[in-house]
Length: 165
Image (tube, rainbow, N blue to C red; front, side, top):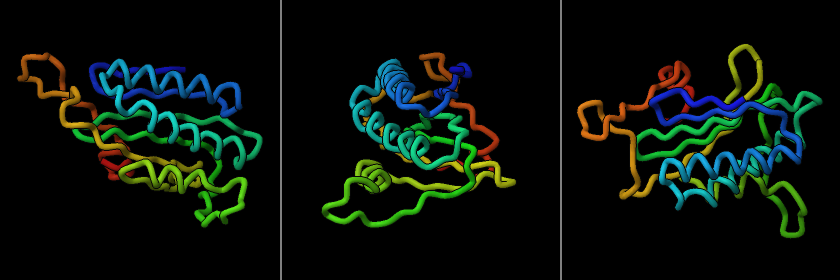
């Protein structure tokens, strides 16, 4: 299911993190960023979301259901992946010859910031990363601006400080 609460700059996609679906979600994220005129962030965002979804596929139990959320808040784009497995990822240094284990290091390298947190009640976790929005990109505006857009809605999680902002 794809949801676009209007008129905020927020998009959420719920699905099962299977290899065939990860490519579809990467294309959805890319299309959404192009729609928001953030073409210069598409490659980095697609790389980051692919790494996070690959981790869901590899490391969660049989329940591969997850939600990818994209939020544009003024000068920052936040992409988060929420799944139902309460175990937080292990962050470890991958050796020079390692064939895996570099996903979070790669996300850290290409993002402005990143992190993870357990969901309340042990109902899963969220792993997120942020990208800076270039100064010339279109941003959500105040209601009194001529564009007619309104400021982005802040979710209850973000208001509680659970989502970087």
